[in-house]
Length: 443
Image 1 (cartoon, rainbow, N blue to C red):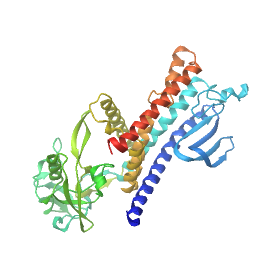
Image 2 (tube, rainbow, N blue to C red):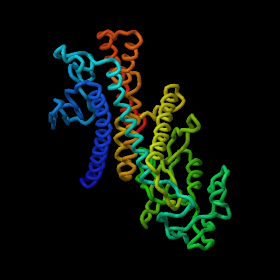
Image 3 (cartoon, rainbow, N blue to C red):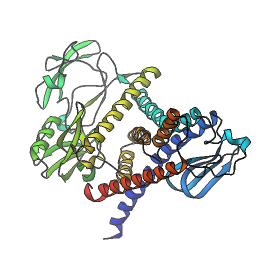
Image 4 (cartoon, rainbow, N blue to C red):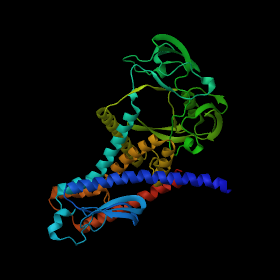
């Protein structure tokens, strides 16, 4: 292999690693800060706040006596509270003066320990909701009446007579907005290369021609999909598949479905040039009505050839929308996990560190907005996983605290240590399986 072939590969790998470290560092910092700040509010003193493990690269001690440090291995972090025997807050190091027992995790009241442990995942959830809500505030929502805010670049053959600012009244005689109608306009208009658009322009109603509502534009590329591996980019327009011209996204879906995983030769229009790629759609488990449906997919999403004019979304509405997206993501993830456990969908849906790193790089390459959204989604996942009732994780600690609340006594230290060992073994086994999944079983 020549040097010039190696350089791009190294550059992509370096970009992926940096994106992964940035995403993970943000999420870990928020998670651990939740533990730290709520612990401080509850009267528990933190000796160390560490971002990363291993040799310390940078550190400083604040006025409260907490050591803030950045370590060499950016794969996690921890808060070590006063008197803790280790970073997992299991056991005591025996060095605390009895007068300071209340400032330790072990000596604090049950409510304070519970709040401190639960704060990490809760802060991850807050970050996710804030990112989702912030995204909708930045993007805005579709304004009424429906008007064109931006026309997407298309090949010259699909040029449109529509202009920015045109108000859409009807497409092929089908009203754009009709109260009580269940079907969307796309489902009601014919699939033709050119459609008649009834518009309002400068106070005058007129009919102009434009391309099919949803041409085969690549609006998004799913990380680690066939399209991602083939180098398809957001903004590409598919013009032909296996030599057959296409002008509608639905045509692409029909061809992919019929191919059933066979190779497809795609002709793409990209910034005025023609690009040819070959890929094979992959079987993917897609969430559907509380369950999952297996489909053949390339890993791309489509959109209309125009962006609608938008209006500002207030903070309260943005938070509500962000919470709804967070809830959907969380319930879908739990549903997927349940279906994996009972064997109804493939374990390939379970991604590990390699998959997360590759996804980080892919989303970062699609732009800052996509990358920030991914950080929100990953933060929600990290918070959810940490609440699983597995010793070592926050959820495991909360189970011990629940036991203490019911029995009015702390669990035996020896028993806790055994459970912690079992939990650590389980986590390491699961991580090993997901790495094997990412690299060999489901590359």
